[in-house]
Amino acid sequence: MRENFLQELIFPIPEFERIKKLLERSYLGLSFSGETKIKVVEKLHSISNKNSFESFIGLIEILQILASSTEVKELNNEDTRIKWFLNDKIRMGTIYDYIHENYDKNPNVNVIAENVNLSTPAFCRYFKKQTNMTFTDFVNNYRINQAKLLLLQNECITDVCFLIGFESLSYFNKLFKKYIGETPSAFKKKHLSKVE
Image (cartoon, rainbow, N blue to C red):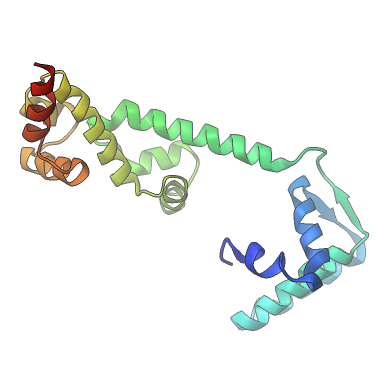
């Protein structure tokens, strides 16, 4: 399902009001028992071999069964979205720390994925969703920002290239121009001449 499935399909339609309320309560964590549980398990088995349209209709039916059930128990007193939000902040903090400590040593996406307990593909999807950038683009952007700081301290362009973890001066120049819109030498000349 697309992420905007709820907002576009469920929430605006009056006939789905019960499902909407169920989904709003779901952040507390809901446990279903008795006949409800039996019906839903049967339904899940029955839709597993259906085509995508029939599976979708089956999913709506399952949500309606759950929404109409009285055999339900709330597992938390607090909204668990706060917990997920905080977990995301902690996870992103770990990722940023890793990048900051390793940007000059060729950060490895497999290593950081393992550090935050995600597979590499899951990490890449998660990181792109959080930052709107790929891991490589983010690291390169971080490196170029570090390069700007060093150039403003009048460091030599070749030294800066290697200090921030690039092995090729031509690639550093190309990437710097891509992100900043001018070469490192033009950037340095423009900003340092203003200081003088």
